[in-house]
Length: 167
Image (cartoon, rainbow, N blue to C red; front, side, top):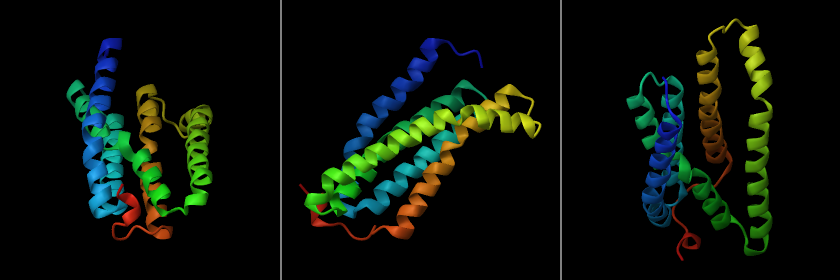
């Protein structure tokens, strides 16, 4: 698309700025409705933003993707962490927080480490277009968002608001 470094910076600024604006709204949802709606809304926007970014055909598509990522995805880990802390016994909270942060770090490192094998797999199955391989790679995070929310819904307690969320 011929983007300049300033264009990439603008997209990141849009995403970061909207994240700051959306964070209080997600906090309010978490406090008043519990984690279910806040996490679902955030992850849905994250998934849509990642997918749109991966399919982007123009600058306008990238702007829309950055908007969705700012309104949703940038707050997802904070919401999940707030839910974990709210559900954990006080004495287990440090361990739960450390475990969550370690999991995020491992996923980040693993995602970067798996880039080359993923790239080679796409070449092996015949994806010759470099841009298509790149788009497939950056869209993969959508599946992790969907998987993570599904796993939480199947094994977690995402019911009514709890007093622990209210400070």
